[in-house]
Image (cartoon, rainbow, N blue to C red; front, side):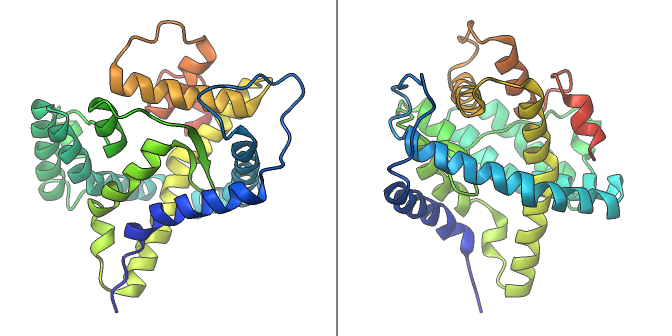
Length: 269
């Protein structure tokens, strides 16, 4: 039996977000909150933010701690390398679609080196050899082509996004090798391992950093950091007015080892 959940997950997210928007339409805003033109669905998004926040705090943290307690760091690193290697075709395609052919060539070299000398991606042999790592997605491709971001969205279980980035998840899903696993048990196992990997490698460190900043309004802080980071990734370093806290969060989301909170993030693994 063949199942291809990643082809339908982004669409399901859109449907879920629209459905929940009807249910959460009466949510109230904090006193003194000024409407943000980028976030016309703020009432709905704040409800989704609370849901995602509770899931990370009450479910994600215990699972992440249990995983790091029973899994050696070298094994977690190897698993993260495999999933990063599996994403390279998607990154490479979007590099090419944006006219970044040098970056696409670098990504192809990384894929070839890590798949062969890195034993299927378990080892990051490309980085050891001086071949840098890029990141890209179809949302950034659409932004490069001039497609506006549209309203900000907080998707249930998937976190911050925009209308453009949510729609872009669909073509990104087709570039994910996991989509084409035909064995149901292997597919579910790979999906589950990928979720745990994403949880411990990205979600929990970012969540911990967000908490460490003690912002007055956690929702607005996370929203501004996400939107400014996406704008930076698409348009370059034109954002000169980022405050230091948001720069720190942006660096963390991009894996900058010098970012504030990186020590605590690495220490949690």
